[in-house]
Image 1 (cartoon, rainbow, N blue to C red):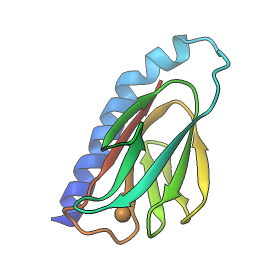
Image 2: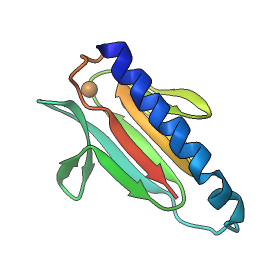
Image 3: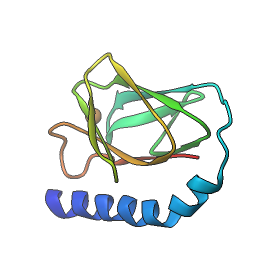
Length: 118
Ligand SMILES: [Cu+2]
């Protein structure tokens, strides 16, 4: 159950990535401020994006995004370029792409957060 959900999530990014590749190369570099996106702990679901005081599982942003791990464990950020980790209280900056964020050792029914950076 856990593995199949993850495989599905990864397949979704890989597909979306192949889809978006031509768009990415056509866009000229444009300076956009880095936005901060907080990932917080809240049950049920375990972790959520907190945007404007609301808890959501999907987010879209332009430019670059700083992901801050305010969860209770490390986070895994999967994209077609591979997997990155964020330790608790730390952050990473991601660029254009599609990402699925999950917590290290999370339960199968916990949230898979989806982030699209354009
Ligand atoms: Cu969590």
